[in-house]
Figure 1 (cartoon, one colour):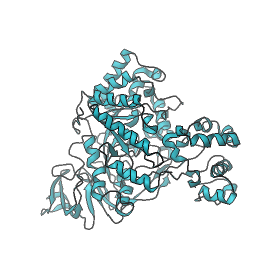
Figure 2 (cartoon, one colour):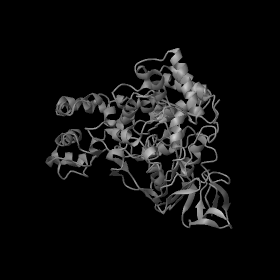
Figure 3 (cartoon, one colour):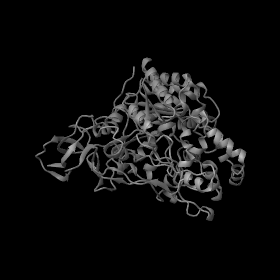
Figure 4 (cartoon, helix red, strand yellow):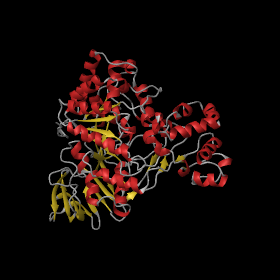
Length: 573
């Protein structure tokens, strides 16, 4: 008798080939039969009128901390995600020297929007090596999870406070190479780093990796080449604004030194600036000519962002805005009341220097969330454009007036400027490129500002009942087999006999993401944005249910993915 049989579903196997009706039999965590399965199962699932597909692979998450208090990786689990990759952007929680936990906590709170109280109370920070960190997670995961080794933690472990503001000497570089090799030997999936101007630590200084010279970055990438089943991940200024020749040369050198693919996050596409996205993809074409492989992660949905003028958010990234929004509240309000300051901020936000953040400048499209003053009573749910029309004021001035009346606490939901038909046509065009991969959710990060985890179900719903920019088979391939193959995940990403039984059963008539809502369930009572899934009946990890009847199950069938054992080498050059 089999452990499980899923009967009568439309099987879409992840390879982009047409679906077919049939059964899937599972035994000991593996798929053992596909088609007409005569043998009974101890558990049987009726999948009539349902789609059965591989579990989704999210290639860019920051669940490094959350998995300690939430092994299910919610809400990704509800949305069919069975494998997550963490340790991105150069940010990991190990290696960790005694006394350095407060620094890493504040860095992660700043760069990745993880509430400091949750980091302080939700983890004991008792590990030291990367091996220690992985051992704490091994056997306590609801989903499969693999982790890159982050540059910032390595630098801090070797150089201490000198990691900020200084280049490494030859001895320090050798020590970093040893730490990276140790982390990968323990199961780390490779190396990640950031040279992006958007990444600053909890004290406002650039994160440690931003002080590395090219020699250091390339030397660390060369360590990756010595280990099986490894990869690279990278964030730089060009990911936001378009690559310079120097940035492209470095990416090529990194990929060639590691002999591995390099992926970067995140490619945004806007019909107002199509040349930028095409130039960024052109960088991948040029990299291939030099024997390197550079892959852009891009999201197939627009992720709503909760913002305010009170707390650090993407608005701080607009040119010259950080100088104002970083002031003490009283001084900040005084500056925002000045006509000359408003004019300057509006001008700079609309300038080419804003890069990808220019998509935040559709002021009239901002919808108001919670408001707090009598002056703003009744404005919740309305757009700034409507209010500005009533008042006879410009949208930007109207927005700032509303925010000042609430002492900056107003919750704002921007309407992205790139939600037009042409931008979506360009996205569909980009998805066809061998140089792109769907992903970039940042799940586990920016918890009170955005919720990217539901992109899988939102994309499927859009493909089935919305814009229909990709067939269902193609969409599932892009969410399953494509990322699994980039990371070399062994026997995952497809419904294939002998492969791991990471599976999703969903209703094609209803599959979607539910609305975002705020929940107060983080350690210390901190809030986060959350979205339930719609139409996802069952999710299985290694043959065991983690979602049944649409409800999460407290189970730990996930595998800690270790390089070499659970991944194979995707060789470049």
